[in-house]
Length: 419
Image (tube, rainbow, N blue to C red; front, side, top):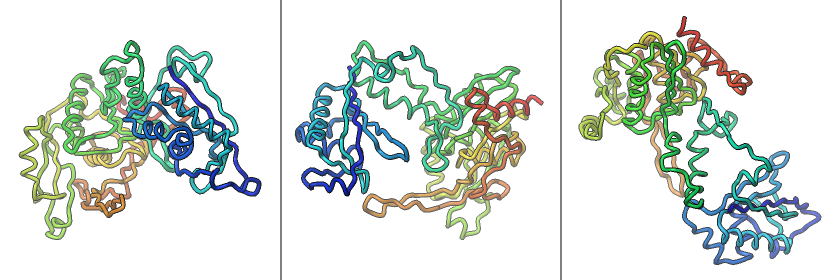
């Protein structure tokens, strides 16, 4: 059973309500409103129990905003009878005593109204006639960011992992999901085929320092598709480790230079790319990690990268690579490599140019400072930092068409490799 408490706040005018110290409580966050205001008014013991409850907590908070992002209320969902009782009793006291709440430096308000609802499922709480089925289409980019370039579609794992964890913890055993149902949320490589022998390989990031898992998944996807033409979708790819080398190796049949990074010592010594330790093979198992660790122990950040010489493939010479302003780091290494050797037609928008290797250092009081420690250059000596990779065919994403189910960038790539 799910309970939901909806609170509506009324803003307090400082001139009309001077505020009495013992009737005014301050908090710096929504969690603070809960544990510094409502719950202690009911029971300090219950507040401590709920605060120390292991994850996932038996409740969830959702702010309700009005015009201008002003906080106008709070919605609390609970799936524990004990938690619900504490929350109801606490907020009832806040309302009855007319406690003035303050969130941060502003937002002084009182609880004007409270509502309580209960249902068997969230769908019953959200709508009187819920749809029996819901389909989510994840489109690229799939990375969630903050700021003016905020993207609206987070990764599937961010959407489903937390709700699934809560459901599996608190739902009756007969209603729990089968094991492994959400493994697809963690997939970084997805592939499917289109008509006319076109394969689409979508890589959202290159996790892991050596990227053995993502390398295996990309190779397996290519082998299973057996396509004559290939579209590689790196839009929204946030980068990662050297697992990107496998993707570059899948674009050519021989061993060729990809790029190199220079640390301070190698730069001072005037070492050339040919003099740097060569990385040209992603190990297939953990047994291959130790030799690499020994080989690069003294190399620091200075290394030259070469493709793995995987042999010929049916799609070679008929490849399109989708990029955009959110394809960064290792994704830009792939794009630059394909562009320099003419291995693929780049379609989409210019990449951001974020490739400098950094290291974070603790400076105390919970802060870290990230400093650049090595510069990356393509094999032809191009420094992409701050410049990015420009596509061969610029195709701005048509958001309106995308809402209608039409990916204009993908269609452009299809037409190019067909011709």
